[in-house]
Amino acid sequence: MATPAASRVLFSEAVRQVLLSWPVLQIAVDNGFGGVYGTQKADWMVDVVQQFFHDNADLQRGEVEDFLSDIMNQEFNTVVEDGSLPQLCDALLQMFSQWQQGALQTLRNTIDSLSQKKSERAKVTGPPPQSDEDEEDEEPQVMECEPSAPSVSRKADPPEEEDGWTVVKKK
Image (cartoon, rainbow, N blue to C red):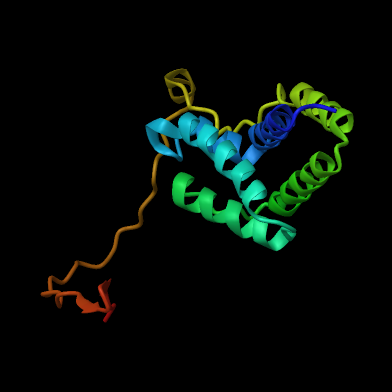
């Protein structure tokens, strides 16, 4: 049997693999949602999550979801609504249970499979940029207008403000 300190390191590595393979955290870090220290915040998150498990006995999925949701919201300005949070929490709870029961080889196998999966990073792509060449190929669009009646100039009423919103009314 591994020493308690060594097995605790193993659980910490399991938490690291789960969190760093989570697409929501990958996107938040890669796109700077956590500011310039996003990578350090992700590393810090690993430490506080594993400490959360060690400090609290018999955690339920809802407690872990709330904890992770709060961290993502406060540290990365990210609200997780893609349905991945319950799955992530289930994986963390399962690995913590394996660690508590001493099933360290099973935990190592899980870590190995996650580290292979980690290479598949989530990517966010925007619309393709429009190049100047595309614009040159297009013919200029011409807008056809029908002659209208002579316009009458009238003084417009100033917009009204209602609860901080500017309301423009048409007469």
